[in-house]
Length: 249
Image: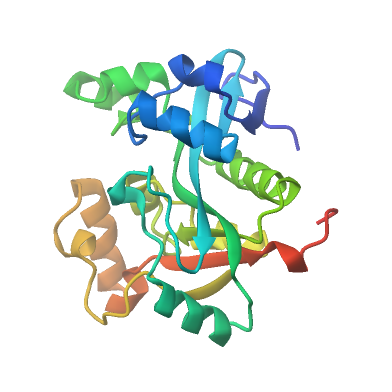
């Protein structure tokens, strides 16, 4: 099924090119000099969705050598990849040999445009469906899944051994949007395996214990009222071994 915008305009998905940076909101990315280094090292800095000339979604990505090395140029706040000893043990437990060049998803933002990015701090815009810089009309249209599929295709084409990501807990869409994570169920449908939690703690992660926006906390309280266990609020570390995936999948 073809991707379309809320008004029916076709949406295309492709790797980001250096000449497109002025057309993409750079909220989570590092400064332009570092982006230049990343383009040289990686070829691209991620995948973008386009409604004509307007960017309406981005999947930010970085290269890491699994399990030991991180991208020195990527912002520390987005370097979620667990330490190498954890990664080795988790991959072995999942019966996966996840070593070598890894293509990591740092964060994903569907509905983030240059316009919503500029309006992000304006309270009057929340009534128009713009929340935290997101135009919610673009959510639920398959754009996030398409970004992920194109990222996997690109990584396979460029000889990466694996794709890794954090998947948001199932059934918490407000958190997924706020955190910039695709749901773990989206990754699972694309063949990713859960190799662990982003924390081994049995306690609630900080964001679910009051350190998040009202709409996210309302979602947490509703889930807890239904008996959801604390550990089930943790994001999942997801991985896809590209050496086990054929080019036609």
